[in-house]
Length: 157
Image 1 (cartoon, rainbow, N blue to C red):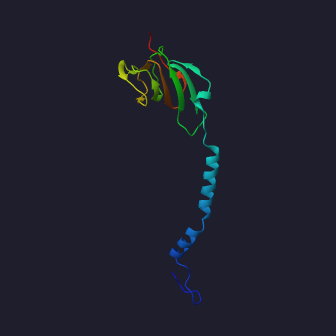
Image 2: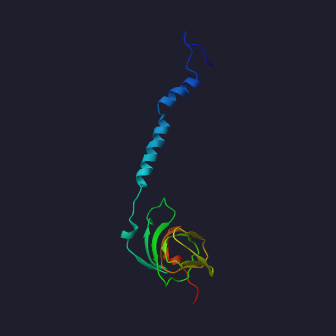
Image 3: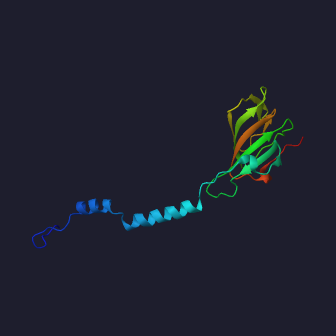
């Protein structure tokens, strides 16, 4: 395989690999450019949740972010929960509630069972679980997939 050429041997594969490590091969350059293009399409985004429009929800009011970001599999909500929060469920959505602030007697009701909460409590709520927050609180809610109001359901009251 390594036959002499004149008085020299041709470079061995090992030598070529070492050389290639010093110089970016064309396929790496192509991948790198593609990565730059993808990063440009999915640039980071900073959102002041308090500056978003508040919309009524079964819990109180919500300010929702990132619904327009296809690379993120959900939405982030800053939700201010009132005493009038209604029990509801979702057939498709999984939610995570993160309690930021709450009254000392605040709780989350999951399928009829009350669970006390305090600031920095996180609650995973699978699809189909009837839930409501009890007491006034401020939460971050992560909803996956993107929030869709047509997936908010209520039992007959």
